[in-house]
Amino acid sequence: MTLSTDARRKAIFAALEELHSEAGLDGATMQAIARHAGMSKRTLYDVFPSRTTLLRAYMDKVAEQFIQPLSTPETALPIAERLTRLMSRNARHQGYGLPLEILRTFMAQVPACPEIGRDLVDRLMQRDLRILTAELDRGVARAEISLDDTGKAAALLLDMLRPWPLESLLDPSRLASPEGFAARTRLAIGVFLGGVMAR
Image (cartoon, rainbow, N blue to C red):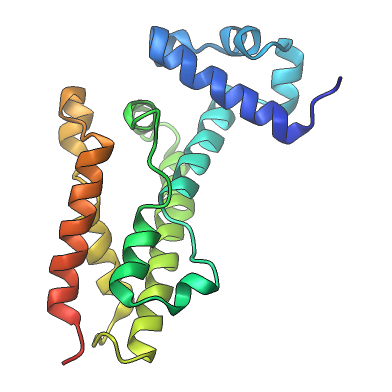
């Protein structure tokens, strides 16, 4: 049976995660990923023309798990609950070690290929900012919160929500657990709303 492109991508990402847990990112070569995913290298290269393309696509997948727009019924919830749901869609069962290692790899490539860094900022970080800004705009329109600049406020909230990555990049043992991320999310939303709730 021939797998669809989507099914192949899922198998490749699963193989990447498994290989990373067994041998680190260096052990996740294209040949090893293809073998682990049960496909030929040629099939793998048909889906992802290079390892960099594969790793970028994986980071896109991780970003989509972090923040996703709310469903129409969810937009009727109070703002505190909307923000909580927005920021805690899918706990990452695989943890954050692999995305952090990919980020470390990309950062090392930025001096020679600055477009890699720009691409990550433009596609991943700006995507999250747009989604969060839209939710804060909704809160202002409903007079739930009072803000002059929802874009800047969204950037501040994202900074509060996400742990500073440098510590974990330098010392992977400092990486927060999913439970730690969840606790930080609750605290950040509570502190943020305490300062912007409409009086």
